[in-house]
Length: 114
Length: 116
Image (cartoon, rainbow over all chains, first blue to last red; front, side, top):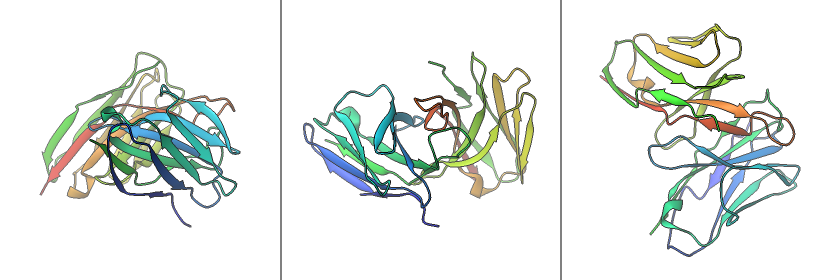
């Protein structure tokens, strides 16, 4: 069973640039959720994708957007990067959006904005 | 928005010692999850507690859910260096499809360091 994989593992960008992060879900999982984890903090929910549609969103501005593909993989896009966007971005997959299916997290992408 | 408070924020102990970390909220949890996150990795689910007063054991780890379902604790017996990591508690919040897994509200975590 292949786990959740994220790419790249590390990324350095300049303020104002755009970035795309990628996530492959665990086999058999059709739901992907994205989280932002700032240094010294717990993860914060960005949004969830199910059946290629956004299924819920946390308190993040519209410059954070996403996609889910037919193979259930997903992308997180961030436009107009700000210094505060520096964080670990975690992707988690599950068998469905409903409760009862545990989240399986990838190891994250460490984004540094300078 | 319900906030989860975890304490202590940092904990440094010697191998073989026992420890307890806490997760509290002003509101009632429907259920609570505990995760461990090691440096450079994503969080890994340890346990889900659902019923008030519930106690679950995972080897040397004992998880308790308060009777009123507003607090939870994690006790580690005879800590080992492999227990080092960030311990996070999290509660699910229903999303559009009625699911409670996708949107997890996490506490800030307890950073545990176990020294040999």
